[in-house]
Length: 263
Image 1 (cartoon, rainbow, N blue to C red):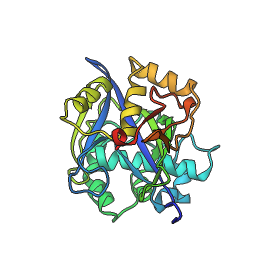
Image 2: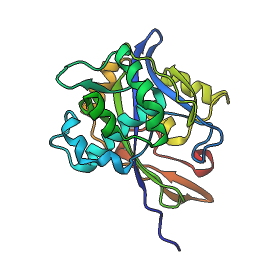
Image 3: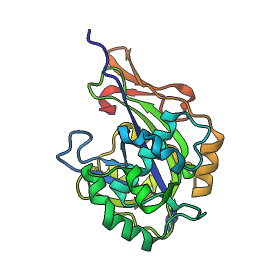
């Protein structure tokens, strides 16, 4: 039997706001020709790049002084992916207590977003040129999932909650993501049930976990209060049925489900 593929470190952001319908989260639709969860409704995110661990960014990341280097790189990747995929930049001008506003964002986006997407510039270079501090202190860990051992492509993914900056307008990149929407967790689940949207298993369970909160404040309070239990799903036989099993203490309403339903 071949060795399991090594999981790639990655980060995902649940960008939250209090909307007219209650707690809303930003979701993007993956491009239908992309090689991973094509066409699915997902949270912005992606794998950690080598440049995300750049020592040059260490002095430009707020709230990471006591964190290991890999945890800092995850938060940097979360901020970079949120900017690339959703056009929201979680950063401050150095010395300012406030996240950048919409006017500042428009200039930074015009100068750097396309180059960042193309890999022609790193986030460290953008931060240096624009004198930015990355607001890693705004990210609150929410969940930690590792792709099952039998999957050919695996990820070691941290999910983070972030309150959306009130005057930045989220907009998908048009490349990896072809649509974006603010939606309640219940609304996203209903879209999936009606067959109008595709949502993969980890995203669905995290939507339902998020949906227990009625506001941004409640979601953050719960995330800070509840311990993070790593979810590495395993497959066990239940009679003739291969079944995906999750750790009971991870805080999800589902502990096991037939593998056919998960797929």
